[in-house]
Image (tube, rainbow over all chains, first blue to last red; front, side):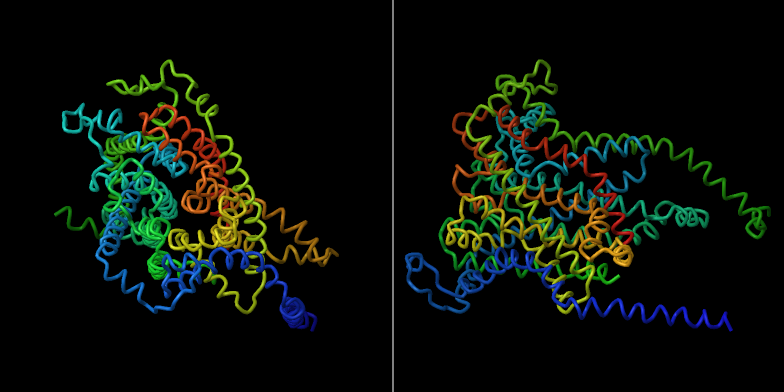
Length: 321
Length: 303
C-alpha cells in the first residue's frame, strides 16, 4: 500500500508542480521577455535597420547632385542596379574580390589545419611556443599589423627586400611592392592570412584534442596506419569545425576593406586594387553616388546573408539542443 | 608454415600488438624532433612581425635606414616613444578611444545581458525569429552599411561625435554577445533561482544574488570581446569620424604614418606608435585568453 502510494504520488506530485511552475512564466509575465529585448532591438533598429532600409529605398531612386541640394528623389526602379551591373568596372571589382576571398580563405584554412595537426603531433614545449606565437599575431590590432607589414615591405629599408637581395635576388633592391597590383595583393594576402590563421589553427586544434585517444588506439591495434587513422577517424571528426571556419573565413575575407585602404595609402593604383568595400566607399563618399553605392551595398548584404545561411543553421541547431 | 597459423591463435594478436608500437616509438622520435623544429620555426616566422615592430620602435632612424637591418635593439632607447607622446594627437585620440570603447562595453553588457536572459529563460512568441535575426545581423559587414550610416549620422549632426560611433559599435557588437551570454545563462540552472525564491527571495533578488554572480565569467568574456572590437575598429570610425580632431587611435595611427610620408617616414616613431596601440591589447588578450576559452568551453559543455 505505502509502496504503491509513494510510487504513484511521486510523479503525480511532480507533474502539477511543473505545470504550476511553467504557465506563470508564460501567463503572468508575458511582457517581461519582450521588455528585456527592447534595448538590444532598439539600438539594432537604429544603427542597422534604418541604414539598410535607407539603402533599399535609395538604391531604387535617383540620388544625384540635384537631390543633394534638396530636390525630391525620383523613383527609378532597378535602374541603378542595371546601370552598375552593365558596368565592367564593377565586374572587375567583383571578380577581384571573389578571387582574393577564395584564395585567402583557402590558404588560411589550409595553413591553419596544417598548424593544428602540427601542434597535435609535437610535445608540450614546442606546442606552447607555437601557441604563444599564434596568440600574439591574433591579438595584434589590424591597423598596427598592416602598418608593420608596410614597414617589412618598405622599398628602401624594408627587411624583406634586404633578405631577398641577401639571397641573391638583386632585382628586389629598392623594389616597391605596393605600387603594382599583383605584388600589392601579395602583401595584402600575407597580412590577411597572417592575422587569420591563428583563429583557424587554434579552433581546429581544440577540435583535434576532442578526438578520443581510445578510438585512435583501437584503430591502431586493428592495424590502421597513420594515414588511415587521419582520413578515417581524425578528419571526419573535425570536419564540422573545418567547414564552419572555412565558411566564416570566406565571409570575412569577402569584406576586406580596411587593410586595402591602408595599404593603398602607399601609392597603389586605386582602380586596380579596390575590393568591393573600397568600391562602395569610393562610389558613395568619393563620388557622392549614393544610389549606386546603396545598390552595391545591397548586393554585398544579400551575398553575405546567402553565404551565412549554413553557419546560422548550424548555430541554431546548437540553440535547440 | 609458421606464419599461417599465427593469425588464428588469439595470443599472437597480443604478441604482435606491442611490436608495432615498439618500432613506432623508435621511429617517431626522430620524426618528432623534426616536427618540433618545424613548429619552432613556424612560431618564429609568425611572431616575427610583432618582434620587428617592438625592435624597430627602440631604434633611431639612422640605424633603421642602414644597409644591414638591426636584428636586435642593442643600445636601443625609448626616444621614439617620447617623441610620439610629445607629438600632436596621441592623447586626444587615446581619450576618444577610451570614451568610445568604455561606453560601448557598458552599453553592450547591459543590452546583451537583458536580451540573453530573455531568450534563455523564457519561451515566447518571436523568440526564434529574434535569435535568427541576431545570428544574421552579426554576420553583416560594416562595408555593406557604412554609406547609409554615414548619411544617417550626418543628418543627425552626430558625425565626429563619440555618441554616434558608440551607437554604431553597440549595434555591431550586441548580436554576438547576446549569443555568447545565452550560453552562459543557459549553463546556470533556473532551479537555483527557483530554490532561492522558495526560500523567500523575490525574482529580482534571486537573480541578483544567485544568477548574477555565477554569470561573472560570461560577462568578463563578453566585455573583453566588446572592448577588443571597439578598440581595434577602423572601418566604421573612418566614416563616422571624418575630422582629424576626433580620431580614435586606429585612425590616428594611419594619419601619423601618412603625415610623415612626404618627408621620409621615420619608421622608428611609427613602430613606437603601433606598439603603444598594440601592447595594451596584446597584454589584455593574453591575460584573459585562458579564462575566455575556459568559459567558452564550459558554456559549450553545459549549454
